[in-house]
Length: 466
Picture 1: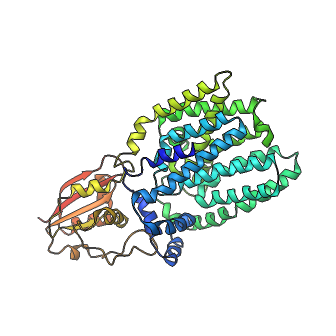
Picture 2: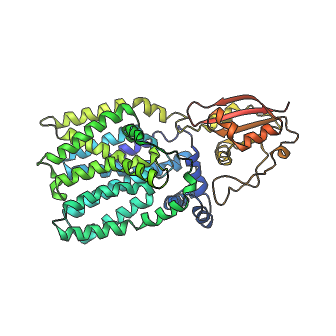
């Protein structure tokens, strides 16, 4: 099932074009190690472990398929571990069903074909729950070491993946009567959490980098099932079945979870894995700084699949049929979203589309509304771009993902009759961008403008001299 899940994720890697986040991965991974360290001291420091991995991975190339392959492999690992965890908690049927449901989620197809660390985080979280159950069941010292290492891996894959760890403390509550186990679990959890402390302090110091995130209210939680599954049609029914799975795990004495710390403790832990990250992320947003972004919660998708599978596998005398029906329904409900994420604009920044909109002529200039947008045009544009009149040098900013640019836009455009202006966002958002304002102030008037299909998308506008 792991291979099938990885193949399902990888099947979308060559369709949707790279977006700004993935281009940031390329930018970071392509720098020297000193340059990467310099970048981490200003922005994305909490992504440093992932960027280090991609630094060495990218030495073999930066093609779309190659850059996204690690994410698909991480999905395969997550699915394989779901089989093992489901077998421990209930049965092989439950484990295989959990992996199958996970594989057919549109969110898995999205993040499994995405050159960022979200798939890594999901795999690390599943590993940590598997390692915890294994250590509690047979508390050998080496198993607690594996558990501590898995927690450290969770902390290193994505800062907000640590929001699943409080759910594991619910298992610790069940061990209060087993002091020998508790005195092994808590030190392993604490030692594994050290990277989270370090990266959390780094992230707090660089919180200016996420100042674009708006404050969210409690109503955003209503969209959580859709986010976890990648489609409301799949997420809502799966969430309901998952809640039933938690209830069955809590009450069914026949389940095998008792060998790993108590069925009720594991019912609470799995339910916490599913719902606590969203609640805690919203709490952090209101207590510290706005951080609620849907993609930070992809680590809950395995829990959604696992709990739903536990419910289906617990149907008396019809478990196999119920499990098959669950997978079929989950797959059918997400067909439209599977198609969408595999379209060229599946990541909402279709740079090749923008390039096709440009009817560039010799002598045309190009100006980027946000300097970081340039990276996508460099990647896909080759030598066919209009003259980049503001660019200074070829290297990106050492402390960010933009590029050094001239400040005198009017001077840089002297003698140019046509200027192509590109920015991330809707047509109307260009009026607020300093570079777009500067082009207008230089005397150019907008002749035409086009926007890609989905927000934020890209806007391509042609400005001409009067």
